[in-house]
Image (cartoon, rainbow, N blue to C red):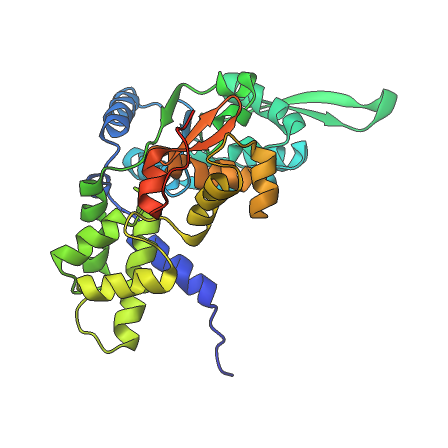
Length: 332
């Protein structure tokens, strides 16, 4: 029988291949790494597990990678789950009751954990106790299960949505920021070597500038550029190949995608540069408010094209200049 391959699985395997496997392969986030190194070395010196850790920041900045690197540095297994998967208290109980000593439980999208489920985590994180209720009504009984030493590492893009009781139970919280362009260039060069791609320095710089300061985006653009070069019989990836690939993807030299430009055009042309409320902007763009707030706004604010005010969103003079639009009136 012919084996059926899953393209999504192949892409996931490729992502795992590009993910740093050693501590010194992780580029950027130097301050975070220095603090984590201190925590890891101190815990190993005492023969203890790490404190519970919380990572937050935009998607694609390396939160999951850090969690697995910590597991390798500590020499322990990492179990992985996500906030939406912990829908009921029984889901948490099932995972924690089977956890091995010193293991790490990595919870992605931690802001989506059910609030009732969180209450099961509190005693587990604080005193390594799992409190369970068996039965219902008058016959219900409560009993506690002692847990071995373990570490929870949580990652989220929306730290503000985590409850205060949950946040307070992490021993350390780290914010992962956007990467410096030179760090993105190093990541692209490393990924190109892994993928056995010949790429010129000019192409590396061009892709790095279009990568939104984000390693995941950089690797995605590199893979699409590789595809373009392969289909068009190009042996090397040079600036021209990179430019043509970005043009095909409708991504400009600063990394703005079609939707980014549409968002700015709507604020400028429909609302005379703003301010415009998030709900109105979402309706005009036909996008969810959460998508605008989590995906588009952080990058546009980072490069200075968008300002967020109490009255709403405002397009800045830099946005006018980039889009080649003449300003109609002074901005507020």
